[in-house]
Image 1 (cartoon, rainbow, N blue to C red):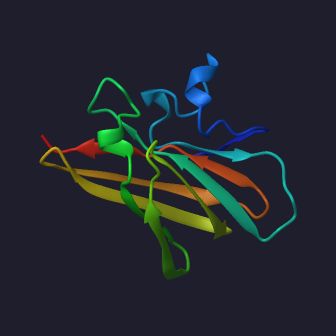
Image 2: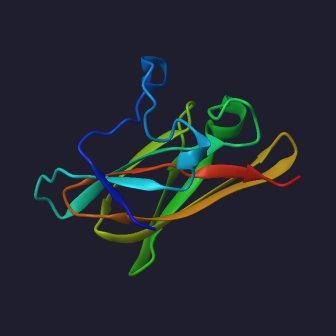
Length: 138
């Protein structure tokens, strides 16, 4: 998957209410990522993400995206995973080393097994915005 260079990030509390159609505001952006065109010269990059769900009319339904456990792992070097929980809006962030990374998340939601997986790149000194979609078994 190719990354697109952009100069601003759109994920953050309250961004859905701006009237603008930011990245990760619809299913067309599911499992894609953007890398910010700016750099601060550091070796690590910042990753911010928004978990979305196609199983409800509201992509950001708290029951599907809030407080979901996730892990991110460098697919080139392995090592220790970065783990956490999305916040109540399905957002998450981390500082990661440069390279190729995988994102996985999973939860039992309304009696269904739900998972999200995607791969993305991190570049030193840049921000990567990811939009993983959580999908539930029928």
